[in-house]
Structures are given as C-alpha cells and as structure tokens.
Image (cartoon, rainbow, N blue to C red; front, side):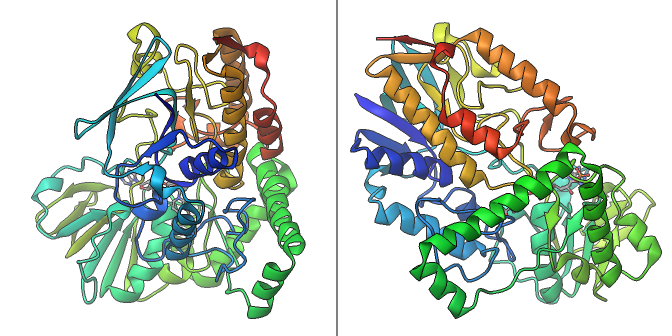
Length: 477
Ligand code: N01
C-alpha cells in the first residue's frame, strides 16, 4: 500500500514531498488535477500577477533564491521557482498529473482516494494540500448569461482576448484586481472599475534588485537569512499589531494609506469613495505602488454604484446608467468556504466532512480533525495569515505532520475531540477581538466565524505546530 497520498502540487504539497524525500521516504504520490505543478501560481496568470509578500520570505527557508528580480517577485518567476524546486528535488516522478480528486474515504486504517477519471488509490495517510483559494467565485448577477462580449475570471485569464482598444469593465477591487487593474489600464481604451467596498492600500516600494544585491545574496547566505528575518519582523511587529488594534501603528498605517491616495487622487469626492469605512486589517491590507496612479488615468473610471444587471453589451448600475463593455473581467475572488468543497471526504463510520463542518470548518491547529484518522491538512482551517508568508507557515505545518506520522508508525493517529474543541473555542474567542471579526463579510469568514485565519502571531504558530502535544491524540497500532 502507498504510505502517503498528497493532493496538490502548490507550495504546501511540494514542501511535504521534499521533506519526505529528505527523510528517505519515497513511498508517496501526489495527485495533481492539472498537467503542471505550481498551484495558485500556475492558475493565476493575469497581467500584473505578483507576490503580495516580499519573495525573500515567500519562498522556502531551506531553498532560498538569491536571483529574485524584484523584491515582490512577478508570477512567472515564482512559478519557475516552484517548478525548478520540484525538478531539482526529483519530486516530479511522484506526481500523477490530470488526477482531479473527487472523493476520499476512510475505512479500517486505509484511505481510498478516487479521481474524476475513474482511478482509485489506497494509502495509510491522506494529506490535502489544495489551498484555500482555488475555486473561482463569479457572482450570479442578473443577466450574466446574456452578455455577448468576452468575459473571464481573474484566475482563468483568457490570454487570447486582446484588450487593446477595448472598453473593459473590471468587477471587484481586491488583491487580484489591485494587481491587474494597472496593467489593463495601460492597454485598454477605457477601463471602468466596479467597486463595492474600497481597500486600505499601502505603498509597497517595489524595485528591481541590483546585480550587487543578488551577488551578496548568492555569496553570503547568512546576510540573505538576516534580510529574510528583517522582512518577517516587519509582518510580525508592524502589521500583526495593527490586526490586533494597536493604536499608534494603526493610525500610522492609515496615514500612510491616505498619504499615498492623496498623492495621486486629487478629487476629494473620489478620495472619499476610496476610503474604507471599516478598520484597517479587517480585510487584506493591499500593497501597491500602481493602483492609485492607475485610477488617476484619463481612461479609467471608478464606479461605486451597485451593479443591477448585466446586459448583452455591458453593465447597468443601480442609478439606471448603462456602461458599454467589450470585455468583462471578474476579479471577484474565490469560494474559500466550505473547505475541501469539491472533494467528498468521509471518515470513521462514513461520516461526511461536509456534515462534520456544517456550522463552519475547524481543525486542531488547522491540521487534523476528530473522526478522520491519518488525515492531515496543509493550509487548512484557521491557518491563513494577514501579515506574514503562507510559505513560512506551511513549513511549520509540514513539521507537525511529519511528527504525527512518526508517532502513528504503521498504525493510526487521530486528534481527540476535547482538545480540538478547546483549541477551536479558544481560537474563536481570540479571533472575535481582532480586526477580521469587525466586518460583516470577507473571504476570511463563514457567517459570523473567522474560519480561515490563525488567531495569533506567526511565532506562536511555529512554536505550537512544531511541538505537537501527543496527549491530544489517540494512537493505535
Ligand atoms: O479576492 P477578494 P481576490 N458585487 O475576495 C468583489 C490572495 N491573493 O482574488 O470587498 C460586487 O479579496 C469584492 O467586493 P467586497 C490574497 O490573500 C494573493 O482579489 O466584498 N463586487 C472584492 O472587491 C487575497 O486576499 C496574491 O465588497 C463583488 C472582490 O470582488 C485573496 O487572494 C495575489 C461581488 C473580491 O476580492 C483574494 O483576493 C492576489 C459582488 N457580488 C490575491 N462579489 C499574492 O500575491 C465580490 N465582489 C500572493
């Protein structure tokens, strides 16, 4: 029997695979729905796609890349980094491509994983590394299906559509939109940006690394590590306190955002429309040097009236105005909840994970849940962050999983329900005091609960994940 089946070849799945191989464990496969590795960096190819965390931190600590071209690397370079990583670590021979997993069921110490094309695999351990943001969400606007022009989601960019000379509409102004709008604005004849609620945006101060900087990073890894540590400190000691509501840092961050806006947006009415009415940090703080300059362009219009319907040739807003568009781009985010939405997971006694999570997803430290022995999640419930790198946190989750696997040996390991409940109750109590809870809806939330984000610092995350409390688990041989 296969020892471990991992689903997904993004940063999480490949990290676990690399660490298994480092231990001399070759008995695993990775099931990948696409024909290439890369996860979100393979899917999101929209113009302007880039990292929203400096790449020195958004990369594996054990595989630094001294040749990042920019401080915030662009999507093609990140995709190349992850693809090279898979190749250099000889992970590709473990990957079974074009395997879209539709179900995973547990019985008598064995997981059975089935794919859409009829394949079936059995393993001792089952690890989901499918990420939180991979199912594109397109709102069901009235009339959407009658639209005659080209339309697509930001994560399903249609590169055959030439935007040159076109009247383009972009719906949504989140992290994806803030990256693609400046690029679309350069090409399109006109661009209308449909904003439902604005974001707090801070200048990122991006620039290319010089040849000397790259040389130093290559020749002196200790300096590169120190630099990475410095970036981590900014997230941990500047942004995280803002999410917790620290007064002075919050005020300074708001001032920085407003200063940036004032620099480019001269019309006070437009500035008012661009100023959020919710606490900074409640939604992802966006880092951009080019968003406000793009909105200030002659060919760009900010539309804040709600969309009432989509017609054959454009969009009608609630004030009765019609906006003609040749192309519509949905930068409307992803279904982040329910977790593992597209896979029918059943655990002990055939209990469905959908039923288990009917009031919202939760898991002990985001990795294991009672009733599902030998199942682990990478980037599971309550593991997301608003202030640091997911890659950094994935490494800690991988260490956690490896330790649980060691403890299970040839048998099974399952988190007990009492410590899982205690963890979850405590997490929700802490989350309810943070900025994320102070907004009605965002992709971090499922109803009233913040289901996606970790309630503490990344220092706490690393410490707790890397030091599992084995008394919280039932182990059987
Ligand atoms: O999605 P979003 P995203 N009518 O959910 C609007 C990560 N990321 O793809 O805010 C009108 O943030 C919605 O409006 P509102 C990052 O973690 C990382 O941009 O709900 N508008 C919002 O403006 C990020 O947080 C990188 O009022 C509607 C937008 O659509 C996460 O991905 C790069 C609507 C959705 O924004 C998601 O970002 C990019 C409706 N019915 C993204 N429904 C990196 O660089 C939704 N909207 C690593």
